[in-house]
Amino acid sequence: MFSLFKRKAPPAHGDSTTSSNHGETAPWLGRLRRGLQRTGGLFASVFTGRVIDDALYEELESALWMADAGVPATAHIMQRLKDAVRETGAREPDDVKALLIKVLQHLMKPLEKELDLDSHKPMVIMVAGVNGAGKTTSIGKLTRHLQDAGASVLLAAGDTFRAAAREQLWVWADRNQVDIVSQDNGDPAAVAFDAVTAAHARGKDVVLVDTAGRLPTQLHLMEELKKVQRVVQKADPTAPHEKWLVIDGGTGQNALAQVKAFDEALGLTGLIVTKLDGTAKGGVLAAIALWAAQKKSDSGVSLGVYFIGIGEKLEDLQPFDAEAFAQALIT
Image (cartoon, rainbow, N blue to C red; front, side, top):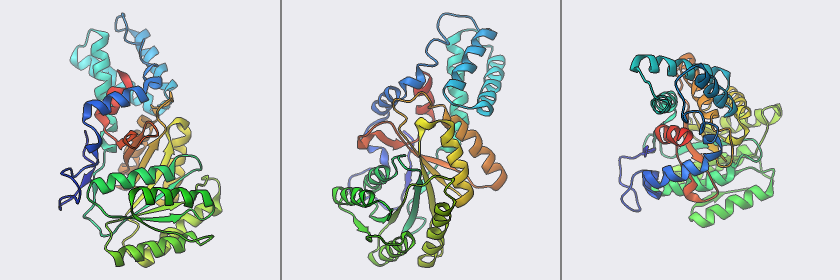
């Protein structure tokens, strides 16, 4: 399994320096396949008992569209696949399937991004997302992964609009036994500032800043996100070091639209993709990968998918592994 967290010092608990210690690769691949079975079902009949012909390619192209890979990514994948078939002389449908997995893996591999926990202390991670994407829950699970990597964590309850969100984050703080900074009806930027200041004073390794859910079309709330970012920089001129967006993978191409909008506002560095279980739109990660490659080409800034979620349990949020994802998507 892909190793997400990088640390020079040994972790405080256990032997592992990564978040992959919740299970070996094989059990996770099994859970991932089950979680992605609705998307994978779109490809199940494409390679069954047939020859390699135009009809196979047309059916595969349709499956990619239905999986919400989008037109640009589908065209990219199909061209790379046809080139690979021609270069290798593949003759059997199963050979084409194996080549498709390799094409997808190569496309999505740049989304694997290591997080160097020793690059800043504290490392400030600002987390945004639309309502209902699973942002606060993901922060709670992420806290445990960071703790397993030996990092001390402080939470900032920056969603000051919903009391339920603050209460939910408090539950995760209690469950994980970590510090939390919260204010009743406070200013989100002030909460973030206090949290970063407290983390410096207490010697914490990571600050996770929760923010209120918002739509990209709510321009005044997008401006508020920019304000949080500016105020955090007053507490630590180098922060926030990571700006992550939590997206619901079940929304398909709408998720890509959210990534583009939030990236324009914040300059995103990472994603957490949730709710991939029970959706037939898992192909959206291919679309995100193609867009991220163009973003890096244009700006030099890479975008990583740090985690994907395929269920409610803690172990159902795991670091994104391109090889495992491509295999689970197609097989």
